[in-house]
Image 1 (cartoon, rainbow, N blue to C red):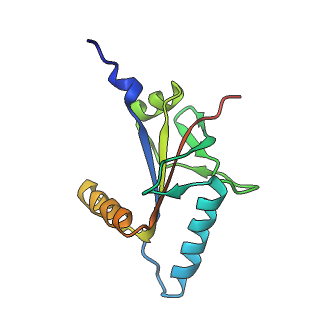
Image 2: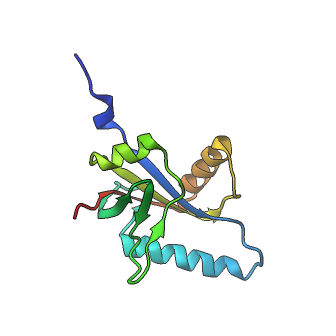
Image 3: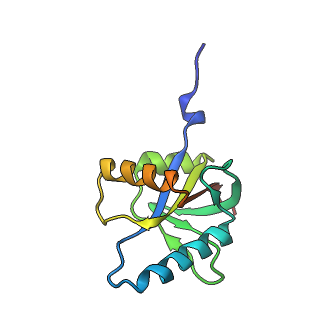
Length: 134
């Protein structure tokens, strides 16, 4: 039996934040991230991942996320050709927001440990999205 693995694949976006520079920043950062969680209707990662609407726009190599702000969008960091091809073909993207800080430039092992920690402590929220067709 021939299985099309591409149709079952999913792309990911992890939204996190760098460690705060001052202790008083922690609450403001978390409040902002929880505002994004609410605006995009994300759910705790332990629950079923909901579809949160078509929130991505592709413009050549640029990927933009509508995160629910009334006047702003977020340009995602550079994505790979395969990631954009998946999204362009209508593939799903899992959005994840982690509330704990993650150091800039964290490698795959650090990201994996980060995800395990925020998932285990209930400090991660998720939702699935796709490309916004005009």
